[in-house]
Image (cartoon, rainbow, N blue to C red; front, side, top):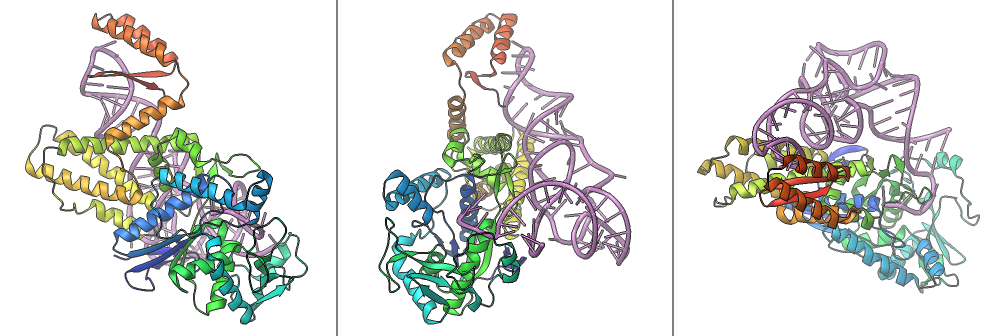
Length: 480
RNA sequence: GGCGGCAUAGCCAAGUGGUAAGGCAUCGGUCUGCAAAACCGACACUCUCCGGUUCAAAUCCGGAUGCCGCCUCCA
């Protein structure tokens, strides 16, 4: 099996060949922990979660590292506003992050380093850069000298000359070049600081990833990931620091995920259209969120809205329905572990092509369709060969679910949870509804259909939908 | 000003040379006292427009139009 990955560095799909055969080192930029995580963070984390899961499934020994930036201007600012320590802010939001991602069934990386726990590593890299003449010190600040790294701009595809024309930020006049960036920021009153050979201070943003990736993955590793917005300047600067310091290639494959828009608008603080993960999870099942995020190719932008989420949610219902039918049909049959040639292989093919989860999900639905057709055609059948293929289908379905991070629940639990979710979301007088349903049940018992229908109409006007089942009448809020 | 991306049915979306996956919605059917849910079936002679390359293009090249992102903290 050959995996092909779109490499942002070359802007081409390339055949994936890890530095060490059979092993994958993967570093993904995690959040700066100064606020709650939004759906955009979720996308990045879920996308790389799936990539890690898939590589592991394919037999690679994966070392997955995702950092927390826990010292930074925004954290300090937030801490000062609230009158607490930066550390307290960072810890609060790291915990929130872990809760949110846990709720989304995200598997933990092998290492989740924090910048503040690797100050020594960071100082070491900076020292090396200074010794090599690639960085310079001014009043306790240390800057990287970008002109000393000839290939600067190779990831983002921009040249220094072009950028200067568009620069519209206040330039620190002390710097040799306006695009030189801080490796170390000298201590200021009220800010966290560490001792260093260059004086007390704290690390700049970019250097932590160079230091920590080297600590856990070595000087050259396989996959470096993050959101598209990190390409410049963050990843560009990481490359400059790391390759200049070690004189070796940094990451082989650069993988960047696209943005999440909200109702076709860019999500931003100023527009006030941030969607916090915990709010989304109040309305939707975590696996519906995953299915939504993975229904689009990871490099394309996606639009988050009630409509698109509701669609993903319906889709997940359909998948769980099929699983439930399959469980019932296959219940009496001994499990056969033989793989079903076809379904899993097709899914694998999709994933091998730059982790095309959207295509993979299409295959999932196609399979569900086949299963339903089969079940319809063999309603009475329980013959051995028939059951065998069902079992194999089920195995494949669950294996695919294991990559996408869905089907973690039994269909029964899933539908129970969906119902609770719907009831919580809606503001209804459930007592009154229950009473009306009781009245209708009476009417139906005496075959008073006209009264029964009147009650149904009344409930419909209240946007309540009824489902008469053998075990009783269920009700739910009409889907928007 | 520089760099990059995208334009596929009512909507979402996959598809980088071989004759348009999948989902949602809609319509028809099975089921039901009627419904709902579930399932089955139907649903793009065509991929923004114009030109070119090719036996063959949604897919490659050139141009036009429209939308978006990055160049500043940002997943």
